[in-house]
Structures are given as structure tokens and as C-alpha cells.
Length: 262
View (tube, rainbow, N blue to C red):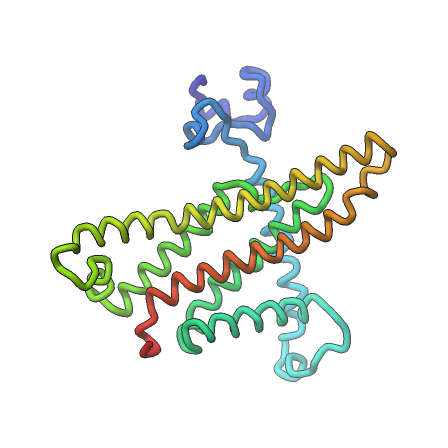
């Protein structure tokens, strides 16, 4: 594959000179697992759109909290604010049960942000014409690396050198072996988070697309046959956001478990 200069990043020039579309412009190297593949920016565009949607929903939801009196009045019907309140209450309860209330409140902004980002990112795969950014391994890996950095920094901040000591195990003569195993295990945590999320969302998006094409070819109704699969996709999107948040909470809880005296 030819190398691309900064000029080649201009979509029109890239398409004319190299025969690639605006969503296939190479930004960095070759993909890790496929040396002959292309790194596209589709997931970056979808991620930008996702961020805009979340910001707009946040601005709508925060209107209830302009004053203390309005915030204390329960909503009479389902709204964007109620939706976020339900999600955040469930996440905070899950975290409190696993790491204690004090640690849960400290790391709640991170886990809640990841849950909302991944959930709405997954849902984008159910919208015709859009692609879920969470189906791309780069997106999942970025989220996983954030969790990786946070729980290691948090563990070291709370325990100091004692946090490093647990990588060596309790027995001195097997410490090198335990250390190697721990390093490999911790290094694969963000990778496993990324592969699990990306694989499931890619499969879900492909299933809906295949049955949509089938319905269009047979009956000319591409939005009729995939309806049951849209409900399945909604379930998968919810479960994957929950699993990512749950595993991230577990990793943080294991790193700072001593804080609550466990």
C-alpha cells in the first residue's frame, strides 16, 4: 500500500489520485490485524454525530435542574430527564453495591459517561443510513484504555507501592511468574472490552442489514422484515452497554477495594 502525505488527506485529492472515497482516507499506518486493509474515518464521523446528539439531549435534560424547586418536582410523564435519571440511578446503585458508596460517587461520572456513550452509539446501528461507532475496534479500545488508565492510577493513588506489590503475589519465589501473568492479564483487559463490544455490535448491524436487503429483494419492503431484529438489536445494545459498564466497575473496584475496608 502506498504511503499518503498530508495533502492526500484532502478527500477530493485522495479520491482522484488513489481511487478511495472520502470515508476511506488513511490517517495512520495500516490496521494492526490486516496489513493490506484501510483505516477509514467512518467511525470518527459517526462518533462526532453521536457526541452532538448526546450534548443536545444533555441540554434538554438539564433544563429541569435550573432551580432547586424544579429539580425536586417529579415529572408527570416520560421525558429525556427521566430517562437519564433512571439510567444514572441504576448505575450508581450497581457501583455502590460493588465498591461502596464513597468510591462509587468518585468514579460514577466515568462509568455513567461510558454507559451513555456506548448505549447511544449502539443504537445508531438501528437507524437506517447510520453505522454504530462502537462496532469499530478503535472506539472500544479507546474507551477500554481510559478505564485501564483510571483504575491503575486510582489503585496506585489509594495504595501507593502496595498496589504494585499485588502484581507479584504473596509468595516470593513465584513472584516473577505471577508478575508476568498479571501484566498479560491487565494488558488484555482493554483489548477484551473492545473486541467484545465491537464484535457484538458488528454482528448485530450485519444481521439487520442482511435481512433488510432480503426484505427489499423479496417484497420491496426493506423496513418490514427486520422489525423483529430491531427489537433484538435494542436488547443487544442495552446488554453491551451494561456489560462494558459492569466490567469497568469491577476493574476499578478490584484496584481500590481497600478503600472501603474490604
